[in-house]
Length: 321
Image (cartoon, rainbow, N blue to C red; front, side):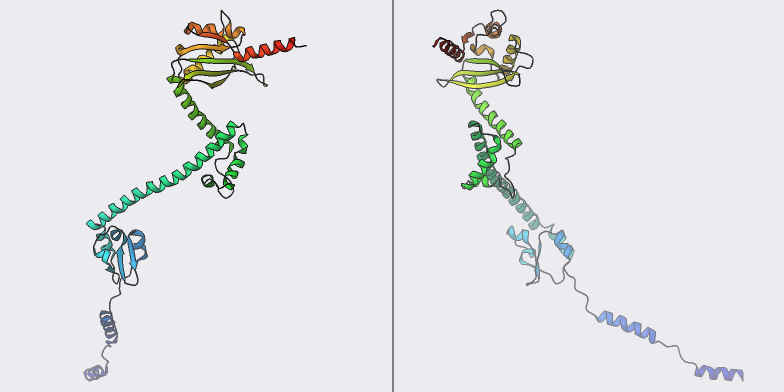
């Protein structure tokens, strides 16, 4: 009886459902039949490969560097951008055509950059030279250096294109007093080098010296130099020396020797020394002329013509009724 019931119950039992397996099988079949997704150009590739350019109308990618170099290659005629791979770009950078294009591009950059720099420097040089001419003018005319800005603005109003390059939105460059001082020092150096190159070429030279005290009670020594240059007698200001340690003959002599050594002028070429008649200058035992003659006994002592004129004028005025 029990066996009959078990067999009957087995007949009515349902077989396990295979619907889950069928659905999974259908999904796999659908995925197999679906077309694969197309690869697209990544934006990061354009940053990594500077030469890469996408021509959207033709759906191609090209190498601009190879095109500029005149190469004929896949990346110059155009490679399809429908299914790009980063590996294609890295392989392209290993080709002979790409390496040639890189060398050509570097050569152009190295050639064009100096040209551009030289062009800008040439323009700025003209502007600075114009400014230095203005500085030289105000120095020659004893005009305050603060007036350089006004002079530069006048040049601009008159159409001076060189100075115009120095103008910014709110100011003119190189008109600050420190810049003007630098210009003056540069001009002084150039003039000194030119003057002393000619004086050194002369066989002999002479000096004119005078000691004075300024309004601040400081003693100074003015030195002028005279020489025959190209058949003409020329006189130039040599230097203004402060006598901080006193105005004795020994101190003056020390300063004169220092100046001559600084300018590269040998005392053996000194043939004349013009001074006033003060004892510190012409004293027979320890005056400036005597100390100089100890080094060069051929030096001629001369009474300064300007001092003689001043003495004669003063004495003549005393005798005028």
